Length: 290
Image (tube, rainbow, N blue to C red):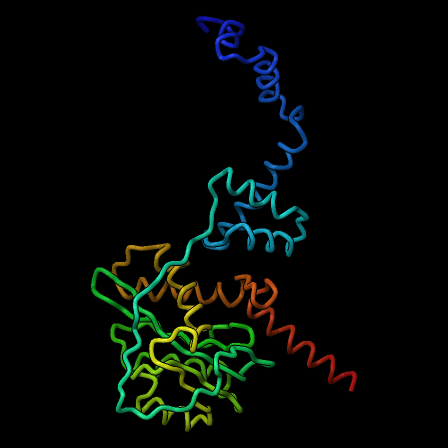
């Protein structure tokens, strides 16, 4: 060192003891303050949770996941460390309108009236689709969500936003849920959902159709929310997209993560599959008592 520690500290100005104390702690980590030691350990746990969330969780969901894993820490501490180390969740943006209504098509009544609640699985499904820009042109992703646990029960990626797109998502949902009865299917007034083939398939499956108004996100708010999460956590987070198969594989992984590991605040910061399991477990316990 050309000038020496003392002369440099006089110019800064910093007490030489501050430098020597810092140098000693670098050599002997056990001399560090307890907060520094705990922060280092907690930061590693935060990073693990954030990476496992596909880097989409903000501090609230990171904190809830740590609580689920038995890590007792204040939410403000998680927020402080994430802010200090530039760890942040994704931010949602606005998309473009994909609902194209044909005024000549008959539509069912709105049986939901913006009340997106259900007391059991397979009581109310909501359906919608969104667009994804790729190097080969637009592709479209359709979802069907069970309102009770916000679980995605059907989805499809295709190159065209036609009836086949939404039909394939519906068929997957009916198969996955074993053709449920006493079910309401809610969508917007998009021509795909009002097509003869789609409405006849709902009738054949004994599913009651419900249709909201045109271009009104509030009348299909839950499906719009899932679309928004999908665009934020997958499409905008991992772009640019080259081919439809890339979108399809990413969607497959996201749906699995969303259903089985993603914490949803609307159902008490648990994953949809866990929320459903708790419902069926409670039914079994009630049957045993009876």
